[in-house]
Image (cartoon, rainbow, N blue to C red; front, side, top):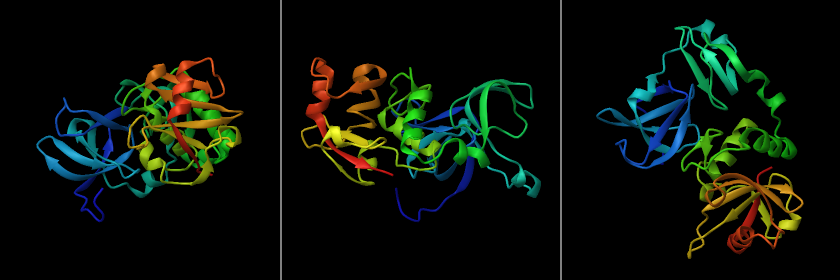
Length: 260
């Protein structure tokens, strides 16, 4: 991220999910995703690609096919309540049917056919910034999610994508990557038996101890996370000495941070 970098224009994500790539070509690695209805800042253009920055300050290359330049809102539009998807299927004003993931923003003319939404004005009441509520959301919305590097929704996510999405749902914007998240909050120690609900646990499988993985404490030595070694969503009992995978986790555990 370059401080005070000039924004070329604002754009809105027009598809339910849009990939962010490491380079301006479709074959390059997906490093993150932006969600339908969210806005990004276009910082640089290269052909049909733009280097875009989302609300979390994360940069990546996005194809313009996924984006629409954000129009100026009329005073009437600005007063309209914004609906947030909690996982739904809609019918657009043009008659198209589309599925929207968790936290996507519905267009004003979309009609919900299945699933659930919440008005943005009611989001903080439905999803309070409370440790128990945060861990409940992680379990309710991400159970069964497959591991996907760069993913941020229940349709596929990585470890830090889970953490970022759940905390964002509860009104707290965290950085995108696990190593960035590890730089926030306060020290919660290294004793997994003493961790509070919703503390973040950080791990490393590298010789230099750079953070490579994150999970959310559930209390009673349990943790919810999305892990490649589990194929996705899992709840671990960190005192389960009979599980070789848990043994590896304990060996790789670095420290915990308290975000609330």
